[in-house]
Length: 196
Image (cartoon, rainbow, N blue to C red; front, side):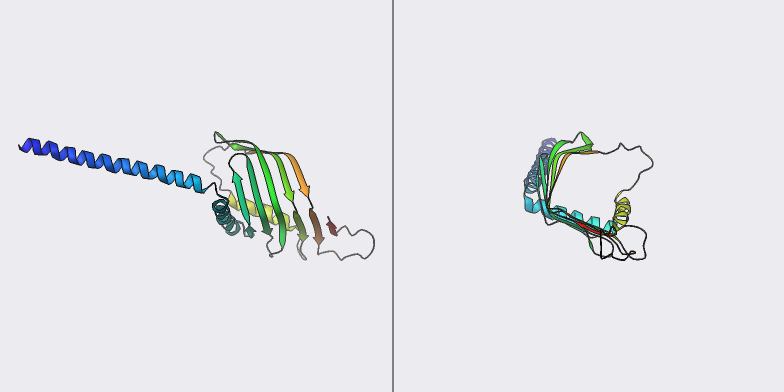
């Protein structure tokens, strides 16, 4: 009798453990499905991108903002109202809508990204050399990007391959100002340019 009760107890415990394991597996599958479906919505993608922009801003000491994101997985990416400010807080870059058609991306080759067409609408770039400095705001920004990269010297990393087959710029604006040089009132002022 005691042996029979012991076997029944093990059966009850075994069934309970099996039900718990199945419930955890089902919960994980449902959670994965919810995350997979949620990440396909532009509102969720935008929120994730804005959080990433906040992290990047803190890391590189340049404010980065993104207005909206819409990603069709592995085929098309749309970013809207992307803005980067330089260290004094002036606009360095701005892009209205930016649309990229992804031609090459593989989970098995994460170091490779190919973009067939990148279209930038209403982009603005402002290169400035502030008074008393000998470098452009762009140089400071590029140097600050190294803060995003942590180098692990214990292993060899493969280079990241990135290509853009076609770049389309619509209604762009470029300006350059060297505030160490005075403006000229006649002719072309090569130290203070604006090109539309």
